[in-house]
Image (cartoon, rainbow, N blue to C red):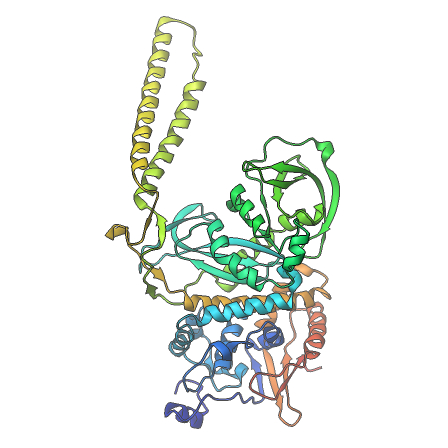
Length: 563
């Protein structure tokens, strides 16, 4: 039955199919590792951890129920147990005490449970329902949405994925791209995996926009949109990859405002045009900037707002917006708060192991999927490489001067050197023309079916990854909610998340009182009295929620120390 298995009767009943699942049953225990993670349970429940699980998921009869599996996976994420395999090195009985069980499932069993929960598109439907729930719960956050792609590098050998440019590594690696939609404060709403990346613009138009038009609350009704031609449904914010005058025009017809950086800003504006302005960023801090605004006509005739920010060094950062109704400062603050999504990616990679594969299965790719022709890509890469060489040679040729006295030997050596360089330049130019002619004969795109056999590939299994990513999104949202509470009493707000990480990994005593129907989680003292003061206030806030442990009648009572 495994190390720590004590509930023999229930396990035997489960083995013969006579048990639906075991219900949590807490006993008084002391010094439970990671006991502080139970402090996150109210926030996890408020974030919708178990809100839709019964609708979309079902497990066969067995010892471990649906609720216990989801709680375990969420607690693992918060306690920074970054992989299921890492549980091999943790005491299963200690984790079981946090769930009211004798022990948690072994790694192989837990993997089987995850696979069972990831069949068909259950995880996708669950994630969509949660996205709708989050947007309706915080409609003010859904009015402005950040869209960005995150490249997940694949180092395995199961399949030869297409290559993507990884900006953080400055390399082209085999990878897939996940497109995330986040709120202004960085909290995630949805994620979409693209094994063959068609680009940000196509993903927004074909996949993201149809969903958002159905989900974003408080959109203007058709009458309001017809009465005010400048009104928009909601705002999308993205980087230069989404800069396209035609795309912005199409989004305007859909009544969706867009904010992005100007790819071709042109000459600098006069400094006397810039005026001081202030706004509130996503972190709640006031930001002072020097801003200027003009109306700009793009190449396709679309008029947009061009807003520039002047830095202390005199640099001008230009953005364009099709939000024609908002004031200048809020629009600028919205665009320059895009760092919140970049910080989200960095934090999730480091703390939640966002890029980790959940399983190593592969799935066939639809034969009709379009992608860049590998032959075209190779020819295009050669052209770019030779163009770089040619540019350097031309620069060297133009800068070449006769620095020695004008005498026959020196002149002859100079002319010979310049003539040799001229021949190299002509050779490069001819080679480039030949490659361009070949590239012109090759179609830029092809389908998976049209790929040569050596370039065929399969996609990585996505459902398990989507399930775990959604659980990590819930964990991040719960941590963010707790961080906002902690910052109110923390003298250094930047330490909020580090304090919570220490909290989740701290030991605690579990003291159930079945007569009073309470489960007291008595946390051990932290590193210093300053943090203890913050945790005491957090206990008051959490206890006010009167959260009950799922599957029981026990109300959670958070407490610090024995006092």
